[in-house]
Length: 71
Image (cartoon, rainbow, N blue to C red; front, top):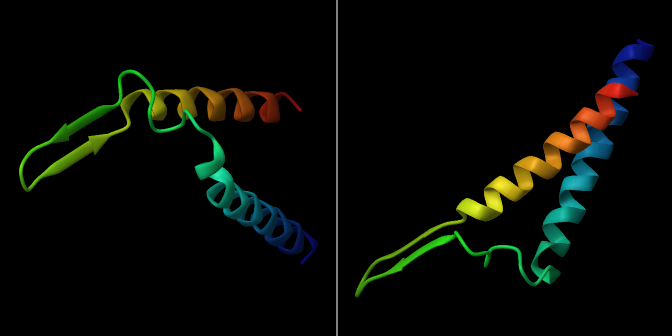
């Protein structure tokens, strides 16, 4: 039972962290407007793919998980 309790606490901390990140992500000025992000505007069509932003977030998360696994 203790393992289930610890797992639920970890999931709760992760959910709170993601919630805080989503709340404050708009305050980061360059995120979503990096060179390499694709934006196509047509008459009745807009396509946006944050290519560079996705790579940056992937690198940051990879470093965090690598540091976490070394612990």
